[in-house]
Image (cartoon, rainbow, N blue to C red; front, side, top):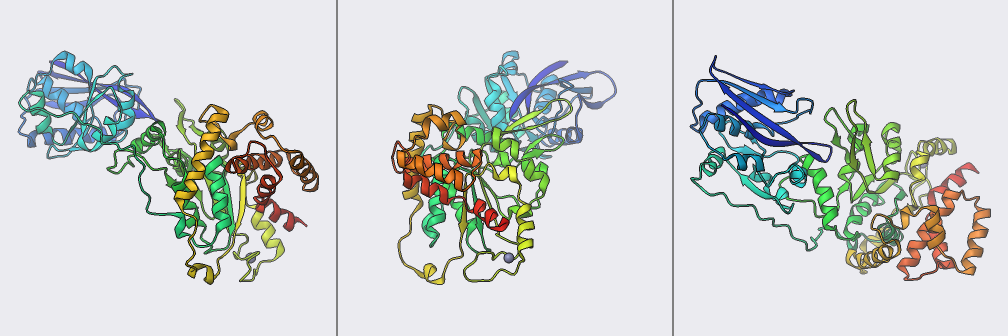
Length: 510
Ligand SMILES: [Zn+2]
């Protein structure tokens, strides 16, 4: 008796069909799995046999051969336990599923020895592509049902135990379709900018960063609250759209990082440690997994202690910062993961941490400071529009009872500027920070006085073309916050303030 069950696997963020063929023949009692299985699939033989036995399902004494096709598709993980078990039961006539139902259904799931069905990775990505694979329904672990049910036009059935599924397939017991419980309303954050005392300049810079999607760099002594500030940036960014939620959730789904939540509905904040490897940061591995930059997709990537990161990982960030995706080359095929994130980087101004600090003296020599700053990756910093010094705060400021700007106030302003940009570019993928030189020329119109100012500054500061464009892009966002169509002197002046690092370099060089 021969039967075929459909399942799927993911490569990158895309799903691919896997056919599980089961053949049962007279001969020596044995059980083989073929079709390039990795160790996990070999082990699944043991799990499946034990699970079936523990569910009271006795197999006929036959030679069982399972083939996972196509053979050239690398198959990872334990997703195929359930389809293999169902295939065996069907081939043994212990269940009788109609040919039509089999053809229309994807089975996914790992089996425990007792027959309970354990979660898998990538359910959302598979559900997303299920229609493309010609399927009408998915039967998968209950734990993954919510993420899959987010996709419309596909029936999702979550199952907890093999016994439950067998009863359903034998028409002894119904199984209810999973209804998505995704709430579109915004979710409340526990953190808020009102918890940050002082640092009004840094908060203003973060407001500009969120509004125009500008990458930002903090320079500040230890304990100045750089991390606290960076974490709160997500609270003022626009709520995630349906499409953004879907994109981010797919990445978390294939990484197995949804952790019981059906979807990613808050913008991610990722802060990898400076010891992270290149594969950990940008993605990689034998079965390429998304790195931190993809987990930060549609959110924030925070790199604290930027000077401590290794050169390799930092250099590997250049391309994704430009193209908003990362391509991982493998012998057989290359895999692309999305990686559109807002970069927040921070570092101490010198090895001891107190260069330029008002309260403590820096003990580093000029040479030491210079060498330290040279460790920063130039090409990476070229992609940062805002640079700001974050001072340590005074005790009096911490004790102040004064009401400080809250995330809600800031977010209202961000939302207005985001709407302006959508109208301006007619495309949600472009924003002030990603304008090309033609767009800068078209959309960064200056008043006469502002024109005079930028001319003077351009010559005095020996601005590079890139530096000049950065100032104009930031000034555009500041003018947008001011609801002004034309960039004026005040907007330019403020934009020029966010060049702290360039000023540091100039001071060190002289
Ligand atoms: Zn120092």
